[in-house]
Length: 548
Image 1 (cartoon, rainbow, N blue to C red):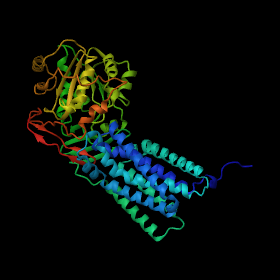
Image 2: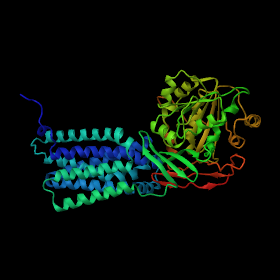
Image 3: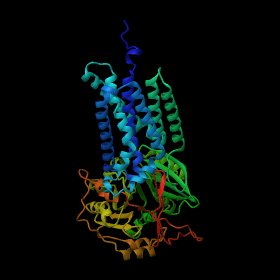
Image 4: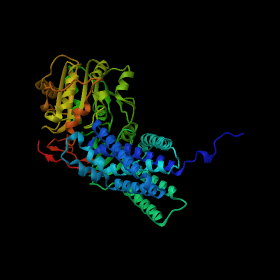
């Protein structure tokens, strides 16, 4: 006797289908929300905590209201209406999400709470509507045992949430844009509404299903309405780790990660330092003893490979290893930024700390270039990581860190905590703010294994005497060697409050100094301070021009 289940025995009922899809869509939207909000508010623990709290609150309110109304209002046609309304709101989310986020970003709230209004406005309504589905479905299940009906409905909904979480995280985000993912969830909601209504689809249901489908398709095709990005988008995608865009503006190609400029290349002169802070990568050559070469360099963080390219082009005896955790960043660097692996350049696609734990290589210089303004991997900030880096440096090795923070004031907490943490391992720590003032900027931190202090005057003298491929006299004027750190913690693996240290920077403009064009004799002039526009979602925030 055949004991295998028949198709009819495993087919979902209408109420089960409704609950399953509501779980898929609600959890999928929650994962997607993190990607949509990150370019504006970052992806700190505060952002994710706010996002999860808003979704739970909206679902709970929907469960509560739906439960009170289920006995008198639950019907298949109302379930159809809930899915159609949710789909319509998702269409609006695709079209106007960036504008709404930008509008809420200016509200006068403490920075750690800044993402809550935007999250509520964008994702609260559809999540609230989907919360009605489970109590309505339990009422329509036909079971007389209320406990059994509720338990079964919520089990099916939880399975849907699991599917939505895993599918969005591991399949959709790595392969589709946020607009495309929103379109998919919207069409799934409309399709569910139609499936619930058949075979008795009335004229209104057919009209709204068709109309909302057309709106979704238009929204998916046009993408979000926002401010002009300030250039031509050559390529964009959602990777497993971040939103990535390659933008051409004039003769400059820029890599944006989660809306922030990460690397830039002059297409006519790929070796030119477009962003001023990358010229500081040559500074370690001034901290070595005369005659001591830097031959083996490790970059933790690849991006557009500006730093590795500078070392390879300037110093013919240098070999460079680059560790980049995001394989899509590596692929984009090769396709759009002319990066080629060779005997002198080796790329490792893995985490920076993981690589240092596994490798037996030692280096003359380790460049830590994996921090962002609002998303810093804490495992690359702690005393334990600094000790690991120290072990992978030779006896005269140097650690160079590109830190994004303010040099002083409330927004300097992360920089000063990282400075203090490095001091626990390295005898001398120096820093070079790149933009001046107290704005959030790139601060280049140099940590050496030698006890002897190198003064600003000694560095300037070495700059005149040595050929390091670039004149660093202007850059060296921002020299600092004695930062106040009494009010900030040492970062450790068991306590690294990076998110709270970054919190004062949320909502502040990130100033990236851009070099001027090359002169006729091939030298790069630095005549002023120009800050590049920073995309937020699909738009830009012009952060101004000021004299040096």
